[in-house]
View (cartoon, helix red, strand yellow):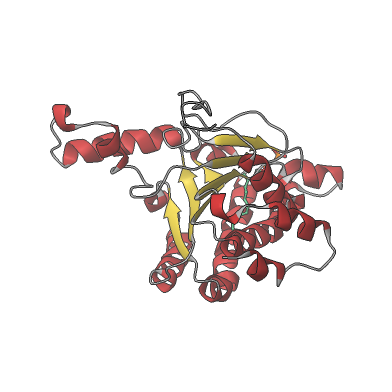
Length: 263
Ligand code: FPP
């Protein structure tokens, strides 16, 4: 993707344009993961039922998915429903599942238009048959797309993923001495995908909430006070500009200009 292609979609003279011009397209994060949080607080601030926050959050999902694809992000992972979310009232769970099914049905054409491939990570086999059915349609119809991979984390837990990976490695007959970090990664839900470079969390909470525990070992974390239903293209661009100013060292030290042969 190029700046021109992104600008074609952004109102000229808007703050989004200024931000888009600050993005270095040569150094985009390959994988962006987002903990979407603050839907309930957004609704409470408006004296609305919590589910209205989730409903409004769908507009943010739409905006972020399309912006990411247009930017040229390779992988976007959204945390939509954790294994712990089953503790919520049944009516809220029902609304979340209904919104998810409706999102896939209504957005399929946008996913196809933007060459986006859709996938689910998490224990999706435990979801209700009607939800699985809708997910399978989305996965099947977008399977041949070669653009951005859009992972939705559903009935997802980071520790459960590691347990599932260990079980799969054992079932595959991997000898303990043959198992290393790289090999183990092949049994995760995200097998074959680069780890997230950038982890975004909305609503100001400083937690990782059991999300991609293995994969975020070296991710840059960007937390915004913005509540998820207010999160838009502008915030995603802000996070990428901030990410590009970070100094990623992966536990090493920054090579000095002298060591690099600079005069
Ligand atoms: C956290 O807000 C948000 C969720 C648990 C669900 C996010 C789901 C959606 C936006 C809709 C479905 C998603 C897709 C990808 C179609 P919260 O309820 O924990 O907010 P609070 O912390 O303010 O109470």
